[in-house]
Length: 114
Image 1 (cartoon, rainbow, N blue to C red):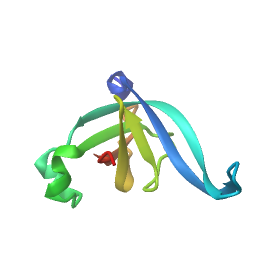
Image 2: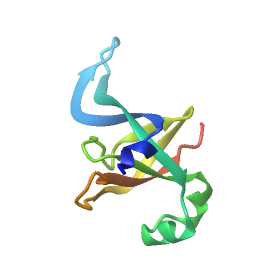
Image 3: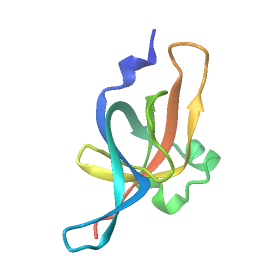
Image 4: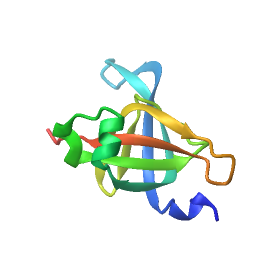
């Protein structure tokens, strides 16, 4: 059975490209690549938080996200799902299990509204 059955949450991933342009007023802005994907989202367990050195203070705002292996995501990405935006914490991990269950796992922490 494939892991794809777990990918039920639409996510928007935004990653800075490193390129800059100018806005209408001539101010420099960073270009962002945006992709849409389907993912799996679950609460972050205490064990996973400890394994990945996620600070306890952000634990209740943290989630574990699984994405298809070919999804482009990095430490600099933000991920939006269910109306909230999250920052990627640490480098995403590729999980190669040699089957249709290969995927990416990453920890995200919800941004605190300004």
